[in-house]
Length: 270
Image (cartoon, helix red, strand yellow):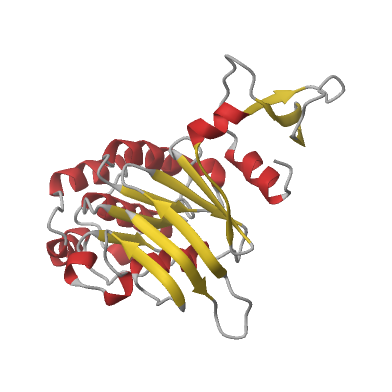
């Protein structure tokens, strides 16, 4: 559970990223945290993880203040940063040295995920490609079984098959007792796994809804022409004509297009 109340934060000589931000996320959610470059997505994850301190307001993660970095807080939260480095050791050595800090670490789960990602315990971390190291970090994070997982651009650097593996592994690994927050600008990579969408714009939360609620209101489809479409809320030209967002009609269903939804919100079309 994450509760943010009246958050103010900004870096020196820059406009505030957040000014009086309120936000709440609960266990059992896989949240997609979206925003333009510079919207503060990574900063917000770092605030939640306690790596930086807020200026004003309050953040509670599992009823604890992140910046205090207590042992009970640290053993139950894991941040996968966008940029990272590893020592020149094997996966096996790294796991033995670091898994002891997470009481619920599951070595069996790790073994299964490593097989899915085609990684071996004897692999030297510094001899792996960036994408392979990213896959190991994701595997380690999921295996900690922390109640709060923060993933910053987890698919950045992964090839197309690995992105598909990531989605499959994520859905199969997390439980209803966990909260997963995924910050990304590669929205197509996560639109099939998240159940809640949060959009940040100009320091504010401009959308915070479940995907089910979004699909109750909006219908996503592709049409050959806009000529006969009178109730289009937002459209984008594509090779097959136009991708459109329409009001959802009774007994109508569709698949969410997260990228188009984001563009429509940022452009204040819906």
